[in-house]
Image (tube, rainbow, N blue to C red):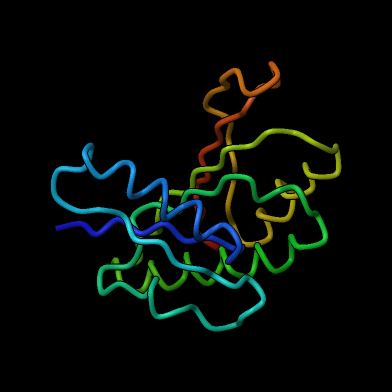
Length: 145
């Protein structure tokens, strides 16, 4: 059985996430997601993400607001992908990104993920708060050359 896990970069967001999980309890039929913190600066992956089967999907949202943290984000994304490939016979996880532009320099992320062989392609756009669009991107992990 799948065990959903929601991992956040910011420990300060855990109470809000746990409240959202609790209020969603009536909608969940078998398992509730769990909340955990993932420190992008830590070179080691927390044991909470080290599933025997690896990760099927990495969902990223609201991760682009601080371009100075991109190197740490890219390093963590790379570790999650490589860990999952080892557990999944070389199959990488799917990468999903929800993106709402705040500053043009946030788009640097797209070039930086190419350094770890991830290509982001836009698959949709939805109206966000205050009418600003939220873009939906899928990341394809390419084989290293």
